[in-house]
Image (cartoon, rainbow over all chains, first blue to last red; front, side):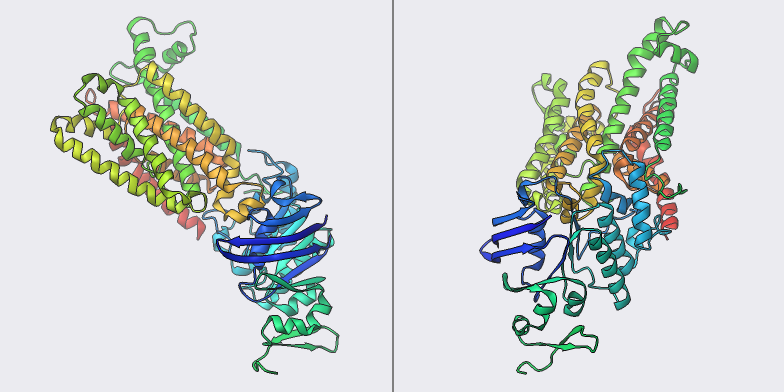
Length: 253
Length: 340
């Protein structure tokens, strides 16, 4: 599956949120959208989901996304609406709604949910209320629901925000497993170090335009990247060769 | 919840639905049997299913022309109100939402008041039509004013409240102008099933059946409306379209119930929470069970209304609140204990 974006423009009223974007999303790879707040990252995800109006073209396997009702795209939001009174099992089972018809809880689906709950270390908590999960558990529940969809494409909005370092890595490892299974991953992320560590490709957005895109290692070392962040970041390379991005205090270095 | 090997347990256990169906059947049988003339269960059963040994003469007339239509209307109204309540609660993310939320009650109240206070006496017979039209018009007005409903269900809720207050104001004005109408309007507002006959059952069953079939068909998808619109969308649900279908069907059911039996309170809030509290399941897979529980609850309440102070009749709304409220509190308390 591949996504070809040509001259994509999104407006909210008079405001241009995404401005004339053209981009090919690599099949079966992890593409990470980075950029300062307000750069249009979340809007980009909504457009890829097929629910926001746009001009230009986004072809997913040759079909325009807003016309296609048969795409199987999972979405992991940054701020999910927590359904009161719903258990983890019910929540993850929602991921199967498209596959099972009304009132139908196929054994396949119940086995699949069992499998994803085990993979996300939520098994044993399936009767707990979603509203009472911790931040890390909630994020895993969201990933589990996305996994239950058996999607071809997964969109994640800041999957690691609000998580401690341990949980950040565990959630990203889960996403990586999904990618290894052949799913195309597109995420937004504020943490450039983690983005460079997990994503194969990085797209830098600024003011609704693509400033830079390509192989994640090249992007992270590019001087253009610093410009996107107003020269407020420094990039170091560890002995292992892994890049680390930190905030810079001095603006004019 | 027990776990089958390598699979999670069913989200909804259909034995609960079957159990509720049995309860409803027994309650309905009891309601047809009890009254000023008591008829044995077996006789009633035989009469209903046209088996040899059924009642004849006066008993048969009492069963077939007085009690049965009343029980059937109770089933229709109870299932309509409970299902609509559950649907509104899901759509508006609000556990306190009830079927009368979007102005359906005040609109129907205004319609009924216009029919009752009208100087053309023949209009009184058209009360159900006026109440139905008033309820539907009020909800449509709420839709029209809110405009933003497609984006935000809360704006519909607020315009529903505004339209409701407006309709109530006109209703109060009309009542003040026609003080003779105070009593009939008041008794209509309390709600009752005393007007039940086969023709009322016939027209109300058509609308309620259509509405409930639509709601049962989308029931599983309704769970998606408990999430954000983006999440619902990724699960293959169009939340904007689904909300409109759900609210339209729930409003049709509510307006029909109100025009057939007046404003019977509490069923729409208590019954959904009762079923959810007892089963510890908020999923809308329970919608059919909620419908049957609502039907059983209302038939039982009506049985109480006509037998407790027999031959006098209590308003059914008094019974639903008097029995429902304490029971409801117990369930809420238990639910909190479980979830802690």
